[in-house]
Amino acid sequence: MLSMASCFRALRPWKKSSRNDSLPLPSSSSTPPPETEDFEKMRSNSMESWSMLLESDNLDNPAGKDAGAESEEWAADLSQLFIGNKFASGAHSRIYRGIYKQRAVAVKVVRIPDRDEETRARLEKQFSSEVALLSRLYHPNIVQFIAACKKPPLYCIIMEYMSQGTLRMYLHKKEPYSLSTETILRLALDISRGMLYLHSQGVIHRDLKSHNLLLNDEMRVKVADFGTSCLETQSRASKGNAGTYRWMAPEMIKERSYTRKVDVYSFGIVLWELTTALVPFQGMTPVQAAFAVSEKNARPPLADNCSPVLANLIKRCWDQNPAKRPDFSYIVSVLENCFSEELDFVCVSLSLSLRKRNSVEIQYG
Image (tube, rainbow, N blue to C red; front, side, top):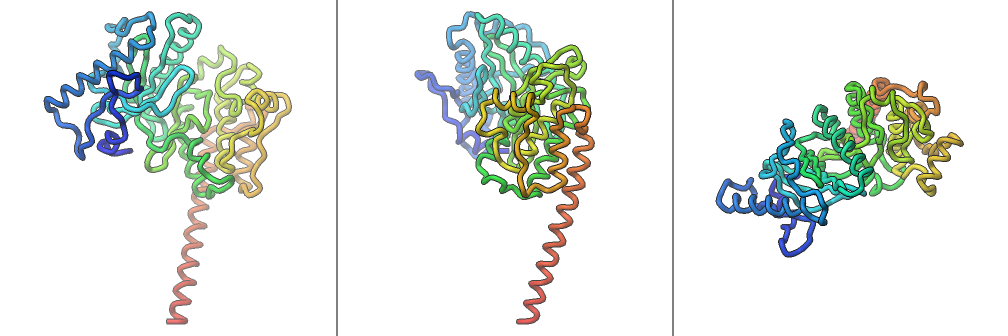
């Protein structure tokens, strides 16, 4: 996690006279800002700017319409929230760096239109579902929920800040097939442990992909973005499709009934990404990839240097038949065994190397 001081330096202040995406942040001192008159003034300015952000774009629904509606224990204290630079965005959301109660955070702001009833209902449902799920999940490999706020037409979720971005960003910087087996196994274990916990809580993610896997300063992976997630009991009464085509299980693409095994399929694609550092079905459009998967049983080509154990696990995860895909308890067990063997191999190799070097030093000493 970035230190608070370095986080402050990285964020530009919001100017009242411009339409910038940033709001004021504390100064870049080496210690957290003291409770002084200046700090109180800055906090007041931040609140004024936050209110202006809520009222922007001339949307009909005024900020604070539901001012008395937030009695939930997760409700954010906006007087403690400072919004910084936007670093990611989607069709209906923006993600900002920020400070909440003197802690570096990520703030996901969802814009819910007032005039488009269908979109409004869908986004409100996604927001409520994400908050309901995140607020009861706690695991080292699940992004930590901190607070949330509903101030129509803008809703926001405050989460821990993951300084190294998404797994997709990390892989994009790497040469194809360049990740070591140890790195692949370590990252895959973090993901699979997070998913094992998620399934143990009766939750199906439904959009597991490298873009929704975040890295912290220690390069540990955490599962994020639960906007399309659902409880397993809800999935029995619904059909696909939810998620992203390149990572989507064939039964979801075909809009058939599904189980938690859709996440296992997606994990198989993510594990393939780790072994190749490539984008799945590169050269195809998302729709072409979906057709190839569902109608032709196509899968991305495995790397020539992929270990037999990982290759076999990937194939099992993305099997066309959901019943043949393993559970995450099995996946974690396989990866732990592989990781242990890999560490043993590294230790033996280092030992032999040191022994050889010592022998040479003695011989020519």
